[in-house]
Length: 69
Image (cartoon, rainbow, N blue to C red; front, side, top):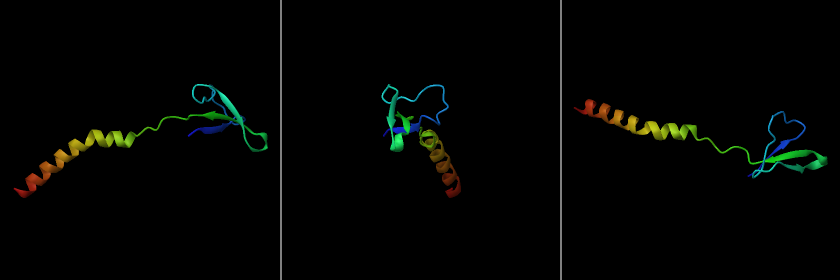
């Protein structure tokens, strides 16, 4: 889904692009917007959980084993 960034309020050095092209569209009252793809989602917490889950499961199993014996 595209994002729309107001041209007047944009202070970045690179113009936003949509599918590799800088596209300007007009909204209500003639306001100009850059149409952009935005950034891909960064699933940081999911990556951390996937990486640490095996360690946590192993640690939990060791704790339960010590407690039952």
